[in-house]
Amino acid sequence: MAFPRNSLRAFLSHAKKSLFAAVATSQKVTIVAGNESADLDSLTSSVLYAYIRSLAPPQNAFTSLYIPLLNIPAADISLRPEFGALFHHANISASHLVTLDDLPMAQVSGLKPENTRWILVDHNNLQGTLGERYGSRVHGVIDHHEDEGTVPRDTNPEPRVMEKCGSCTSLVIRTMKSSWETSADSSSLSSGAAHAQGDSMINDISVTRTWDAQIAKMALASILVDTANLKAKGKVEQADKEAVEYLEAKINLSPQDAAHWNRDKFYEEINSAKRNIDSLSFSDILRKDYKQWTEDGMNLGISSVVKPLSFVAEKAIKNTSEDKEDQFVTAIGDFMAERKLTIFAIMTTLTSAAGEFQRELYVQALSAGHAAASTFLKQAAKQLQLEDHSIPALSEKPGAMQPSSEGPWRKVWLQKDVAKSRKQVAPLLRQAMAAELA
Image (cartoon, rainbow, N blue to C red; front, side, top):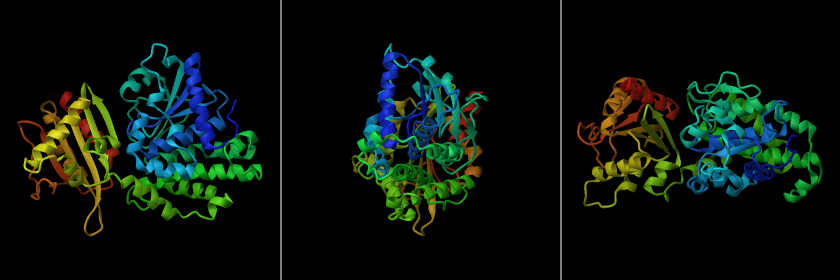
């Protein structure tokens, strides 16, 4: 039975309770999981897919309720200030979200693979412990990354969508739009639930339009941040533009939201919150937006950071009387050791003195990854337009940090092709690793 028309807050509360009940009674569950970096796009893609699909599930669905999973422990939500900025617009809190802490994988009586079906959003290869346990249960995907060939070709009745787009949420909107409209037309509203939410119950249409506006704002947050308010060159696709138009129309249908809606101000609020990482520690900055892959036993990790490398390096320097580069390389090495990484990369974004958007790329590798890192440099230097660079907090001389045959291999560049994000850099590093292992 479809979930009755209700607020996002009521849906998330119901989804969490239903997960616990299903585990306790060995019932089936359908989980919609974003990637392990758990950024805004993964959050909104999973929540939006699960919410709309639960309102209008296919007749032959594995279960009628879809549960969105934020692919991090609950404690890590605090590392993402942009989430807090968004939550009040959607009338939810962090406690409403289902996180890794809510999956009893370690228990013998936990969530058995055969009782699950997984839908992936914002990635198409379930990684880590989840992948090892539930990888064979993936049966649907909406993603804007390169197809890794792990999702079955036939995922009926769930979609199998993988194509270039600024934001995965835009693809979710395009795929689920008709179901959202169908549920809006049927308006199977639970009046009691509406009162429980504290909504002013003037009439059914007014309430549902308010709920739709809250969900639309949540979806817009990731699309606008990922596309720089639809201004990012080489990144914005038609699906992004159409999604923004559709979602803004949802907001404008709600009188109480339309009166105060300003897209530019909303974007600045969420984006400014995302960039506010000054209070985070060195390790927290690296793990805030982090993804990891394995290539035949070698692990690759990439952190995306919204501040320059100098900002990151300064967090690693504990003693100004000691060599700053050594402290930075050692701190990176400690981070790699905790995650058993062979190669680690940091991708940063910054604005130049002239106001231009820029990207930096730092790569560090253990001895086992020296050859792969060198191969990456040879193969990707031209494609990414890599230019020797320095980390001013460590040295003002471009190219001062050079690969070494002894100790960690490390190198820093200015990435002149700013259109290429982690979606493009990660496959290049993985290809270099695979080439050396072949």
